[in-house]
Amino acid sequence: MKEFVKNFNWKDWKVHVLCAVIVVLAELIGTFVLVFFACGVAAVTGCVFPEAGYIATALAFGLVIVAMAYSIGNISGCHINPAVSLAVFMNGGMSGKDFVGY
Image (cartoon, rainbow, N blue to C red; front, side, top):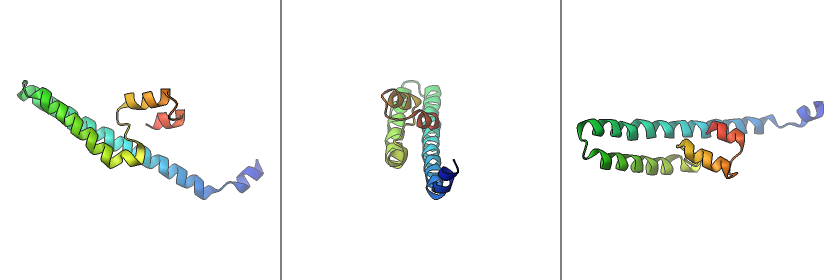
């Protein structure tokens, strides 16, 4: 055990932890934007304009997904919907540790 601790590169360990934090933070921001804007549009237009609410809600969800795919897609893969993360996990595309973070 002492040999493992002696040879362990602590600098690389810190970089891996920092990368994991950045990925989780990007997913947190993406999920927040999706819920805040898309669900906000659904709540506002559904109450005020019931006929136009469907189109506005669909456009809001679509535009938010595209915006997040371009902004955080290269950082974390843009799994801002938990169902997407579950599907990737079940197909073996991510480990259990990564799935908990997503």
